[in-house]
Image (cartoon, helix red, strand yellow):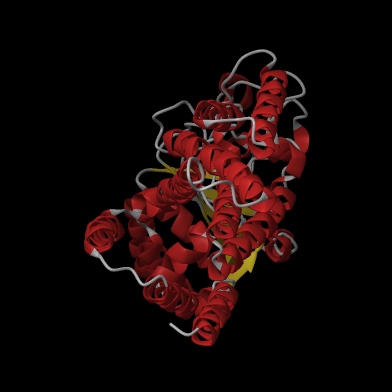
Length: 464
């Protein structure tokens, strides 16, 4: 293909990527943004294949067919509750693909084809390091989210020092490859150490901080792709990878602020470390928990003027978003103001609750972010919490020994009455009891989230 045409199509693809990312920033435009980015990727792939004058497409077509089948099955069968795990896996696949490109490129530079310059070798080493860390780090994140590994921080004494030593060894091996003194054995050793580093960086991080880790790994996968673009001399891969890397690190920063975590803590696997002893469940609850019924809660809602619904992972597990929308509709027909209070990391990945509520056609203007809804709780008659444990836990404000201390939370305890819909008193993903459940203004509505909300809606309609 003509070089001018190739660059023109690559520019078009880059513009579609930028427009797609911009569209993904708002629920209302997210679908269109996703479609734009997909079209941009299609343009980039087709132009690249034509530009390289590939004579045999058998392997490429085989990969397209196999990948499309796997992607279709996953897209149609994965539940929203498992979407964070899916995102973690996709991040890992991206890192693994970049790792393979770097390894193949280095091996292709040996023998008759001599190294093609310092930039290429540096790009290979960077891609190897980031791709390997992304691959195994994402695998650990997946295992924790899927509960194949415990959600609590894991590791051993001195793990941060071990990570620093491992990183120094990786840099030394990379320096050997760049200087030309390294060979394929050096490449293999560097890859193995980087893969181990990915594991040891993520295992010390607790499950409550996994949304931040996912955002960071997403950024890593983009950076690895950008570095692979330098290796291949492909400008659109550099641009798309840089966009993913930059947007991922911005999202990571937003998540760090939302959870009161430091970016260095995410990068070096030292998040969520407790500063002292944490209260146990018996100490927190001690017979203070008050159980309620749908009929009793409906009587509270009968005189309410403002109700704030706070969704969490329990809502996602119960697939209760449509039942919640029906309850809100019933209350609004009676003149009650209903809004939804969303914590930025409710669920197990950023935007999890926004997507669920949008699926139930909840109006976007009723989804209030934490900063705005917290100012309303003191003038709220009833706050209904559905499975949102850690993001409503007062320990974040009061218990300095808690791993979540300092994390901004939804101040539901300041509402006149709090109704918590939950199966049991089991802890959230952080593994902590919630003192909210023992507060004087809190009632527990035990049961499956969807069934409990449907029963509550029926009781509300009966009082009309």
